[in-house]
Structures are given as structure tokens and as C-alpha cells.
Image (cartoon, rainbow, N blue to C red; front, side, top):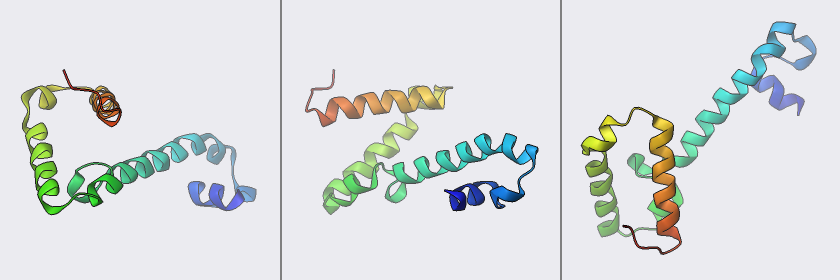
Length: 103
């Protein structure tokens, strides 16, 4: 645990000042966010890595095309909240993973 804390704070916990303790939650959140984004980004940004890697070449081309089309979609481009867009895509992914028809 001390090694992880030292990595996040960039110094061993025994040498922390009060300011280091106060900065820890924000530093940990930034590392966590970067980790989540790395986990969710597959080859060429097409989605979850394990799913993309299971596709054949034709399916990969189709996935790449769909990502491109979504990126160009005016509704997606106008969305101001990144969190709202992510939530909408996660909801859609949930429907697809359960085999539900998209409306």
C-alpha cells in the first residue's frame, strides 16, 4: 500500500506534508481516470480492446466505419457533456450485450 501511495504522491508517505495529504485524492482520481480511459480504448479508439481483438478483418473494418460515422454525427458532436455521452453509449452497449433490439 505504501508503494502505491508513494507512486500517486511522488514521494514516500513518511515524508508527506499536510499539503501532500490534501492533494492525494485529486492525484489518485487523475491516475484512476487515465487508467479507465486506457482500459476503454481499443485499437484506433474503437472501443473495448478485448471485443475489438476478437473481430475478423471485415468486422474490424465495419467497427472502424461505425466509429467514424458516430464521430461525425451532428447529435454526438453537439453533446456538451462528455459524461452524458459516455452514459448513453454504455446504456446502448448494455442493450446490445443483452441481445435486445435497438429502437
